[in-house]
Image (cartoon, rainbow, N blue to C red; front, top):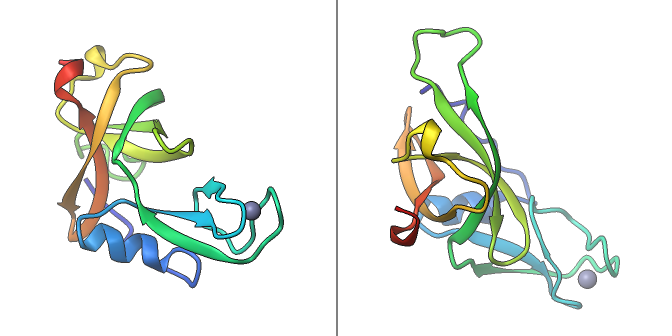
Length: 132
Ligand code: ZN
């Protein structure tokens, strides 16, 4: 799989620092506690610019998914791109690993894992033991 490395900015640098350390960090409003992803400079609920980071549980459920074929490298293996509803109440785009496309189900419980892909550490998700 080919990966365009992330270019962290002031908003999402802590997220990528966490990924490199094997932690899934989420941002939340330091005033009202609303969790948000992707990271952003202001809370959409209370408009506070105070924010903090915390380590997520790393568990969630598959909301939706597609099979993706690289547009300019058709010989690359297909990957499953999924929307994951994290238990913390935010949705994240990622890939599913260790599962066949035909076995993916809506609501399937998944857990985060960290994988170096094409030289870049990325959060990926795989079915939990309960899902197998
Ligand atoms: Zn807020």
